[in-house]
Image 1 (spheres, helix red, strand yellow):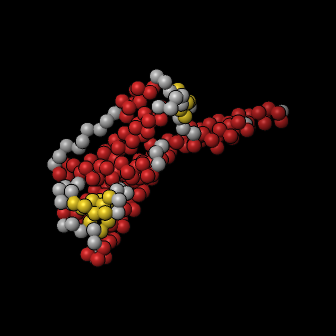
Image 2 (spheres, rainbow over the protein chains, first blue to last red):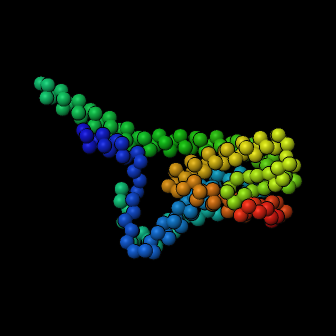
Length: 77
Length: 135
């Protein structure tokens, strides 16, 4: 009961934690966040390109930036 | 008998706690999506006026992902109001995106500024490192 109460407090704030080994890994993770943010913003502002009669720029798949690091990084949930 | 009731009560409490725990993120996601939709509707409605003011050289994009009057003495009350409303919506959007993507608000704002600078038309004003320049 106390465990579930504790889980109730912690779980909404929980997120995937990545175990990092080696100094080079964070670069891939930072890139992935920027790609996801850019994709969301591009999607949000797509109305600007429609108003111009243009095609919105192609968004980058966020998974592409993480493929190189996926083998070495263990997502903890 | 009392032990059985307590056990039942404890199980019910665990089930309720689990239901709340697993549904809370989904509830937040739904709220975030509807908030973004509202912001987008307002931004889209405001967009023609923002474009016109940018073309006229009255306002420009900044490296903080916001808009600003190029020459504050050159804008009247209605333009100031539009700038404030647009910036309030952009700030709210950046907060939502930051929360959803696990990024800082600063990261989102910088990425937005990059997009805004890229999409700026030739001759429009851009503010970077405190200095205005024309694209």
